[in-house]
Every structure is written in C-alpha cells, then in structure tokens.
Image (tube, rainbow, N blue to C red; front, top):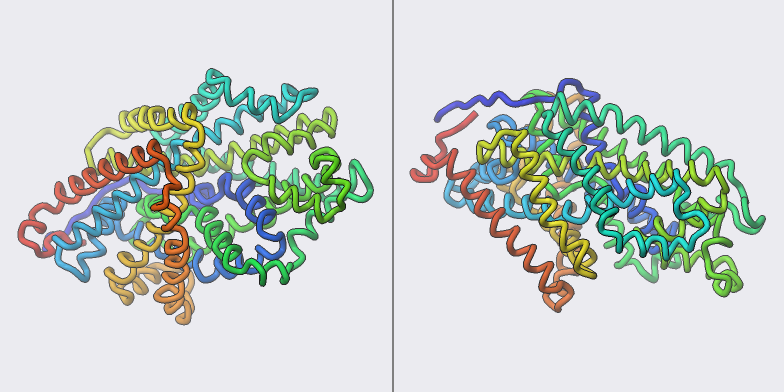
Length: 522
C-alpha cells in the first residue's frame, strides 16, 4: 500500500473552526423557518418531537459528518465523492466502492448548486430590506404591495444578490484560514449580539398596541405543550420536526464534511460536533424563537385582518400560524416595524441584517464546497474557481427570478434530497466504513467520551427516523408535484455531479480501481 500525505489549508484556531461550523448551521432556517414550523404545527405541540429529533437524529448525524470529513481530509479530500469512496472500500472492493462515491458526490454537488440557486436570492432579499428598513422605504405604504413591487424590479433584485455573492466570492477566494475564518470571526459574534439586542427589546416590549395582546402570549404559544394538537397531528408534526432539525444543522449537504476536512488527523470531532449543535440550538430556540412569533403576537392588531381579530385570540393565533413563512417577514412583520415609528427603522434593520448575516455564513460554506471541488478534484486554482462558481450561481438562479413557482417546487425536492443524502451518511460512513472503525475515529483525539448507549441510536434509530420521511414524501414527487423546469435543473445537476465525482475518484485512484484492490492508504 502507498502512504499519502496531503498538505492542505487548515483552520488557524479552534474558535475559528467552531464559529465557522456554527455559522454554517445558523442560517435563515433558525430565524425564519423555525418560527414558521412552530407556528404552523401547534406551537408547543411542535417542541416535544423537535427535541426528540434533535437527540436521536441531529446529534448522531452531526458526529457522522464530522468523522467523515476529517477522514477524507487525511487523503486531501474535502468533497463527498472521493471521501465516501474511501470509506466504502473498507467493506467492498474498490470498483463497488466507486459507485457509492459517485452517487454520494452526485447528491452533494446537485444539492449545493440547487439550494444556493434560490437561497442566495433570499439572502439578497434580506440585504435589500435591511436598506429599505433603514431608509424607511416601505413606511407609509402597503407592505404587501411593496414586496410584490420589489420582486418585479429585477434591477434591484440582481443588485442586492450581486453584492452578496461578490462578497462571498471574495471571502472564499482568500482561503479557509485567511478568508472564511476571518469573516465568520466578525460576522458570528455580531449576529449573536444583534439577536440578543432584539430579544432584550422584545422581553420589555409588553403590549405596545392593545393590552389584550402581549409578547407573553407569543412565548406562551411556543412553550405551552399542546398535547391535544400533538395527539391529533402526531405524524405530520413529527415529520416537520425531523425536517427542521435537518435544515437547522445543515446536515445532509456535504458541508459539515467539507469544513471538517480541514482538521488535523488528531483534532477533536466529538466535542466540536456537540459544540456546533449547542451554538446552533441557542441561536434557534432561544433567539430565533424569541423574536418573530412574540413580535407578531404583540402587534397582532396591526398584522391580523380585523374580521379574524374579531373572532378572538385563538383565531388570530391560528391565522398567524397559517400565514407565517418566508413572505411573512417581508409583508407582515414590516407592519410591526412601521407601528414602532422611527425606532422601527432601527429594529427592522437589525432584523433583516440579522437574516443577511445568518444566510451569508451558511452560504459561505456551500460556496466553499464547490470551490474545493474545482480546486481539489479538477486542479482549478481557488481564486479562479470562486468566479466559476459565481457564474454557475448566476445561471442557475435565473429561473428563480423568471419562472413563477420554480423556487417552491425546487425547495420541496431539496428537502427530500437532504434527507436522502443523510441516509447515505449512515450507510457509507458508518455501515460500509464499519461501525467499529467509525466509533474509533469518533474518539480519535476526542476531548470527550461519547456514551456507549449512543452507538445503537446511531446504528438503528437514526436511519429509521431518516427513512420514514423519505417514504412519506416520495409519492408526492412521482405524482407530479415537481414541474418540468425544476426537473430539468435537477437531472442536469445529477449528470454533472455524477461525471465530476467519477472523474475525481478515477483520476486519483485509477490504479487501485483497475486492480480492484486497495493501494492508497494513509
């Protein structure tokens, strides 16, 4: 066997790594998607299965992806195709392992491109609304009409999209330690500071419009267990909670593995993975759960239609839950900011710049994955690769702007593919890699010992929790839920991702594939 040693960029500090990983996890899902899921799934009824999914699914898969990333990094790989080829060959011959690597790499490549094709536009919306809030552009207007007008102004959309993506390209082009790490060391502390300031304001806000409507009503809605709702909607709430854990921790994308690949072979992954989960959950549950819903509840008289408001608090909360979503932040919440007067400009700015920071620190990780793929697999220089990725995002983002319904359909597929790739994480990085190898790698250089009873959770419970939503949602895709345009984008990205992964593996491990025996070994 041939021993190989790769010199790659590495994280300059432990805090830089943790903040980068937390930045990857903390995104729009924490401050928009989380309150949306809570509001639309019975409030407190959602929180019980949410924490169950975190314990039995989120933490185990997080550890799996950290282990896989560091293992691939030993061989100089930060992308899933070659990494999962190396792990699969522990149980099967190289030629069989090749296809596990190709499929995994295909899923990761297509997912990253498809997700960022619209995610970057959402971040651009947040950048735009940061400016609109500060200048009071939507004050004195119908906020719903203002948002509709903005979406039809392609010049403004591409302006704020361009500002965001150019800054991403600059950060990623500077490398891991000198670029990404330096940016997140500034942006992540600011993100937490802005969020804490907003939460502090909301806690003392009380009842700004009507004494019958208080922020306390919003907190009560979130944290009072609604057992009757949970029992009546158990299956759907469980699926929603499982999906949210996935989104919020950025699992099933290949991004955690990419960041972890820049670790040294003895760097801790057990405690670092747990720290990433903890920082994300603080941002989501404590901060994200304390802003949007309490604020919307306190300003319900300005947000909820009068006819619904007249039916009482339960009907109004149900309306907020039904309407809550991404658009709610751009159409309904601005009504609350307008009601605050001049202070609303500052509060609105903080809210939307918070969303921009959260989205940026997630997008930077996905951007780096594609750049690493070009740099490591195709020998394209990093600075050149950053602008190649820029062009890819520009092209793939055009249908988001010009084709109605494209983004929603693509998002539903991305949700499915996230779960599918996470299932591949367990199949390849645990079962094919061999459970004992995985457990040993998890504790290599670890600063903590993972309890032995967590091993069966990783081996049996986590894959079941992943398989259930896959089975439950697959029928919707084959029944025509996805249109021709999204399917075209999906299939094209699959083909490109499969070809790239096949080439990357064949290029470096061609000799052992030809002989069908392991030759390259660290």
